[in-house]
Image 1: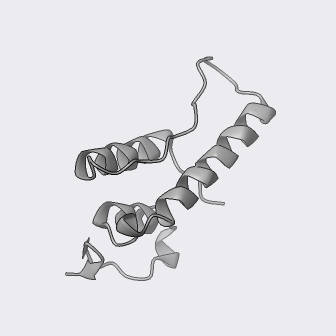
Image 2: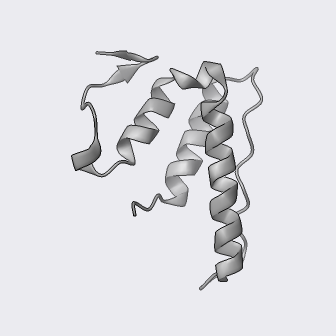
Length: 94
C-alpha cells in the first residue's frame, strides 16, 4: 500500500483552484479537527471521500491532461511503478 499525505491532496487542490478559476473544483473531504488518533470509522470515511474526490478530478476532462494532476499521480506511485520520469506539461511529455 502506498500512503498519500493530506498535504499532497491540499497542494493539488490549491493548484487546481489557482489554475482553473472558472471551473468548479470538487471539494476535499474534511480532515477532522481532533488531535491524536482518529477512529477507524472516520478514517474509512475520509479515505472514501478522497477516492470520490480523485474520481471527480479525473472525470473532469480539462483536468485529465493538466500537468499538476499528471504529476500528482506519478509522484504518488512507488518509484518502481512509475511509467515515465519525463516532465509533463498539459499532457505532453517534455
